[in-house]
Amino acid sequence: MKRGTVITLVVVALFVGLLAISTLRAQRAECDVCVVFNGTRNCATASAASEDEAAESAQRTACGPLANGMNESIACSNRPPASRQCRTR
Image (cartoon, rainbow, N blue to C red; front, top):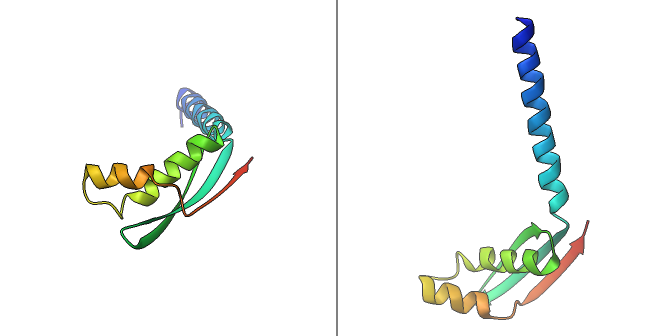
């Protein structure tokens, strides 16, 4: 390979590594949330910068397969979770 190609590949690899590290560092909290909606239980895990953001994201994800349409999705997301377990990194 030419020297210029090798340098370009190294620079791209460093950029991708830096991007991955900065993305992972922003994820400070991880939450497991279970919801019960229309008699069905579903659980999901999400990570975010704060516990509240992670729990909210996990609840929306858990409600996805349980709700049909926007109204049910909103109703499911507004219910208190059946269980919520969060941890910080």
